[in-house]
Image (cartoon, rainbow, N blue to C red; front, side, top):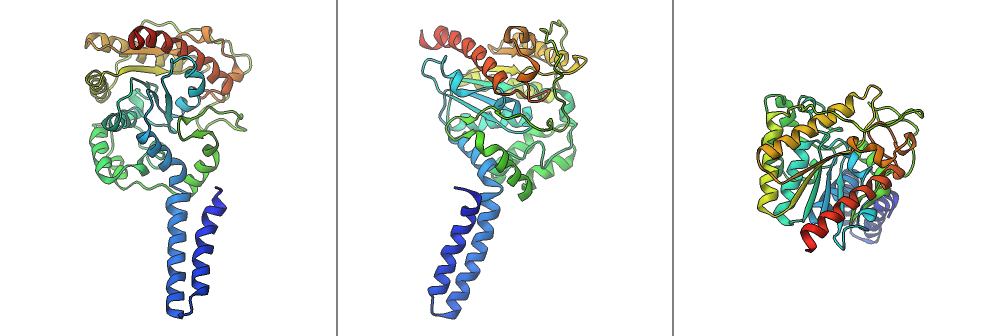
Amino acid sequence: MGIFYKLLLPIVFFLIIAILNIDPVLAYACLVIATLLSLYLLNIIITPRTFNFLSTKAFLKSQADIYFIGSSRIFSTFNPDIIEEYTRGLSVYTFGNNSQNFTLSSYMVQELIKIHKPKIIFIDSYFIRNSYLKNTMMTETYYQAVLTALNRKQRKEFAKLYKNDDSPLSILKDILSYKESSSINLQSLMTNDNHMNINKGFLPITEYRDEPTPGYDFVPEDTKFKNIRTPKRKPIHSQYKREVLYLMKLAFDNDIKLFFIDIPIYSEDLSREVSSCEYSNYLSYFAKKTKQNIKVINLNKHIEDLDLNFDDFDDSLHLMESGSTAISHYIGEILEEYIITNIIN
């Protein structure tokens, strides 16, 4: 149902009651109730909740076998319909929100496992970067798609998880008092509602943007992608170490296979790609050092195998449907091998 009808129907309904009511006092009361209810529906159901609130609630109520969780790079990359061609009957769900950082992804995994234990979880590792701990942008950037779905108790738990020496107190205060603006939510609803499937999460982008995502660039037409090869390791922040260790333990205790995955990106000087691989190398080292059975996949190391071109990218960090299709098949094959070896047999 469209936004216009969601707003119009309750108003008309209560106006009819008011008109038919003979008692002027009751009629006036009905009009007041109609006005208040309409404002409530506009603020709670139409603007802040239809996209962000319901998407998060749907995720927490989902019962899939395999999850992909993280930032917008998750929903622009992984197509659950394609991946399910390889998963031998196991269901796939993607939960990606704009700039969802690693701490928030970790928390949402914890909330999910409280009510449902999947077999496999992929977590976007792009935001395991020390620079993001110092980012003070709060309201409409890093948490907009999730925090409205968390109650105050959950927000307190998340604030404790997020607290570290690099996080200003203003961020923790914002987490507890956060409420999305109507304009931002209305924009999110209009731009994102069409590629969300309530049973499978978000679906990849099918239309090119007129402008790249703010802060990113279009990929030049003459770009020739090469596999990134670097033996270097870039250590992650101590907070991320704690979160990774906790996720590893949580996965082990609940018999869940945990994958950390980073998705192809573009930068003119290869700095983002190299940095991404160095963080992934450290994650692999850290898992081995702590004797944890997790798998780290960085697709920047295999970009030639994926045969991606500039037109497979929506911008330097997000893929189009064609790029998503190539990667979804690639990951599907990895999953199929794992499922046959470790779950079916």
